[in-house]
View 1 (cartoon, one colour):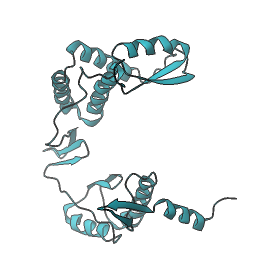
View 2 (cartoon, helix red, strand yellow; view 1 turned 60 degrees about the horizontal axis):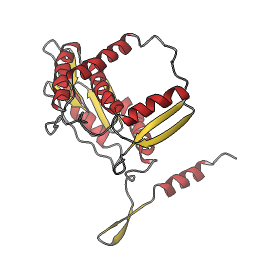
View 3 (tube, one colour; view 1 turned 90 degrees about the vertical axis):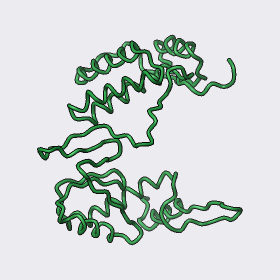
View 4 (tube, helix red, strand yellow; view 1 turned 180 degrees about the vertical axis):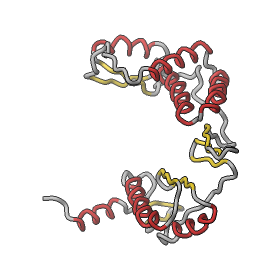
Length: 248
């Protein structure tokens, strides 16, 4: 039989009960949701959708986007304080803070800039404490992790940056990888592969190897791990790289 609504709510409350220890005392969390619980993200999203259902019909917006409890809004200046009060008064236990734009406003890792002609441009945003330290090329990690590092950051540049800012970000990434020990030819080779994939994203090619039927995790050993993975791949065996355990 399907679960009744009351029974489901009881199960959720049971799963959200949290106890923790501090200074030899055991505490019971009675407010909010526990960090790390598989249910916490789901509950947070449900609450935020409820907040949107209540508040959005009451306010006049030009643009609204949200990720969990971080909200980016474009609104007329005369409506800022009223809108902020409406959102903050929806739930007693949920209060927001507000950051206004001064021609620029960051939203996660995107910096949104208002241009003089009233258009918007975007660029990659890094906090002031950012150190530009990434996975070093000389570190004992599989080569696929280093390739993924290059491809991920360059794809972020392509998706986050407007056309004029893209070139600046690409130059920054090139210097970043060189400072972290990546050979220039290694960088350009895998950037070339990204451009080929981008230009042929609508073309599906037939895979040369059969889909894996088995998967193993082995410690990462420089050169040997990649060679073993290549030898096993044609036989339908996929290999994941785990931490190196001692000396092999």
